[in-house]
Amino acid sequence: MNAVTLNGQRLSEVMAAPETETHAAANEPALPTRRTPLFETEGGKRFREGVTNVVKATIPPVLGIALFVALWAIIASIGGKIPGPAETWGAAVTLFSDPFYDSGPNDQGIGWNILNSLYRVGIGFGLAAAVGIPLGFLIGRFAFLNQMLAPIIGILRPVSPLAWLPIGLLVLQKAEPASIWVIFISSIWPMVLNTAAGVQRIPQDYLNVARVLKLAEFKVFTRILFPAVLPYVLTGVRLAIGVAWLVIVAAEMLTGGVGIGFWVWDEWNNLNVAHIIIAIFIVGIVGLLLEQGLMLVAKRFSYE
Figure 1 (cartoon, helix red, strand yellow):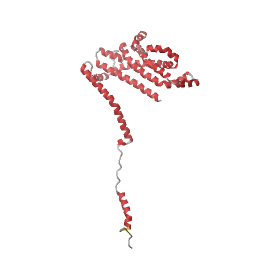
Figure 2 (cartoon, helix red, strand yellow; figure 1 turned 180 degrees about the vertical axis):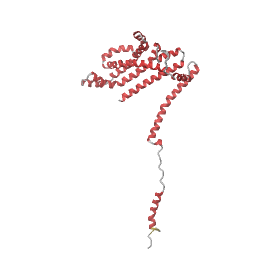
Figure 3 (cartoon, rainbow, N blue to C red; figure 1 turned 180 degrees about the horizontal axis):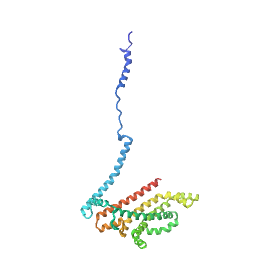
Figure 4 (tube, rainbow, N blue to C red; figure 1 turned 90 degrees about the horizontal axis):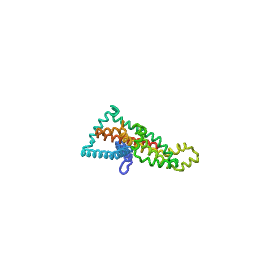
C-alpha cells in the first residue's frame, strides 16, 4: 500500500518533524540566568546610600580640622612663641601616659584635675537645677510671682559670674564651696527662664479643662504642666551645663586647689604653653561631651 504523501513528502515524515525539533530543543543546554549585581539589589542600594551619607557627613569636619591644624602650624612657625601641633601632640602623649599620679596637693595628674572640676560642676549644677526648675514653674504659673521676681532676675542675671566669687569667699570662708556657689548662681538663670517660658506657652484651654475638672494643683503639675514644659526644661538644662563648665575654669584660676582651671594657671606660672593648649582642648572636648549627652537625653524624652 502506497504511503500518503503531502506536497511530495510522506505524511509520516511531516508528523514526525515537530516531534524531532521538540526533542532537539529539549536537549539543548539552558542559557545561564543573569544574576543581579550586588549594588543593584535593594540592600546594596541602601548600603551605597549609607556609605555616601557617611562620606558627605565626614568630609566637611575633616577638612575643617585639617585647615585648623594647618593654620596653627603656620602661626606657630612664624611667631615661634606658640608650640606647633607636633610638639603639642608629643606633650599630650606624655601627659596622658600617667593621668592619675599624685605627688601632693599641688602636683596631681590631669585626670584628677578634670574629675575635681566635674565634681564641683556636678554639685553646683545639681543645686541650681533643684532650685531653678521649680522656681521657673512657679514664675510661669502665677502671674503675681512673675511680676514680683522679674525685676530681681533682670538685675542679677547679667552680673558676671566672677563678681559673685568674693561674696562666696566672704560668706563660706573656703575656696571650694565658693566655687560651687559661683557655679550655682551662674547656671540657675537659664533653667529658671526657660522653664517659666515653657509654662507660659501652655495653651490656656488645657488649664481651663483642669479647672472644670477641679484637678488639684499637684495633678495639674504632673498631668499637664510637666509633660508640656519638659522640652523647655531640657533646653534650659543644656544651656546651664555649658555655663557651669565655662565658669568653673575661671573660678578655679582664682581659688586654687585641684582642678582644670588651677592646672591651667599653674602651667602658665611654669611657662608651659603646650600644656595650656592641651587644657584648652580638654575644656572644649569635655564641654562638648556634656552638651551632647544632655541633647541625647532631651531627644529621648521628646520622642517618648
